[in-house]
Length: 556
Image (cartoon, rainbow, N blue to C red; front, side):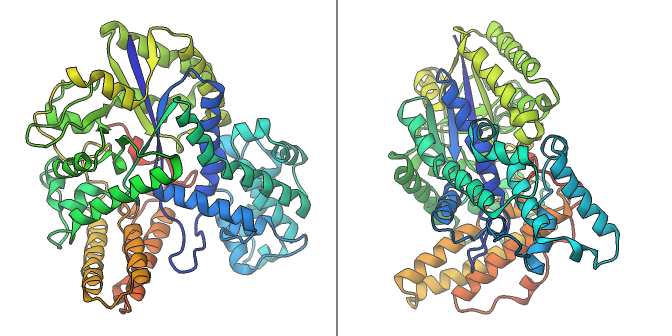
């Protein structure tokens, strides 16, 4: 019997301003309302489907922040604050500019064009922008209230549209939403967001899913340990001027320990498996993963290909090389099948896509009836490109899988337990990620390298302050918390020339805000270089859907 192992990875970086706690971008809220709710609903409707769902602790932190906002009505997300405003209250100029900028960021063919009232709001914005600079002053409070509501409706999941109360009513009404209706919408969204962690915990407790984790703030751990490991897969990769990240080993250990503490607190038990940030592995990192007690970890076929040759199969887990202690199993994703879901099937009718995927599984099963088929991808970023948020695709696919006795869906912990005895051993592990099998997405470009240099300088300052004894326990904890945010892989991912200039600027700015805030916490003056953008780069590609279709899903 062939085993199909889905892993759905859920991650968003920390979008909160380091001083005010204000959410500068709303993507956690929007993915929570659309994708995390729908992915849970698909599993609840199809109890015969087993899979692994990976949550990054920094995402869970922000979900809990939203739960607190909905409970208190003290809004730290401007989108929620604007949606909750009294009738007739015009937002201030900054809020108006922010909403006009953010509220059409989505994949328009599936999330905007189907809704005539939302299109009218877009067309009104286009009209006033085409006039003189004062024309937007004629947009009323009602316009901004409706726009905030429609952005929330556009990002609502199909499970909420089909099973909710206010969401289908407001979509039918279309415009002129009262404060009472907007408050009812927020109450419904609050109920959905508050239920997310308990729903996934319940799925895990009944054995349908395995919940795995990622180091706490999603650091690119191999680079924290050794910049030079980037040259294992890409020998000519330019490296930062700094020789190494100071104290990287202890920082990786801290992210791993914090991830397990988060997992136990939220889900009642430690995680067995670890999906490393961006599927990035190295020999030194794998040693720390094993020492932390994880029984499995994973990456992509690009890493396997560099480590064991082009013919090395993903249809089995692998034991670590002889020189790496422990027996943590390594899984490597089937890039073709994963990328069909991530990229191709959005263009297909849902039933046709599901049938094609089942045909691909059958072909693999026929070649090797005992094969393992690992399909790993983001559980949040692809679905906006599908009609109806991939509702029909998942309905048809999960139903077809439930009816196939010769293809079994399994968690990765189950696959590890069943296949450990017969797993081959890697000859070596070449450092890389699930993007091209290299680490070039996070290092090598001048802007990315400069970001590493700034972070290294700050880490030296933090180490001196932490060693001086002048910080009390609370201040030390806050320094380490903010340092963890600065170590996220996302800041380095967005810098460079491959992403929309608008997104590059937003992440560049938030990264520098975090660095400056940590200097201030250390009672040190931030370097003047933090006043200047790291990058004038980025391209002019249109952004769609918050974190756009990440390069983590780019075919190798």
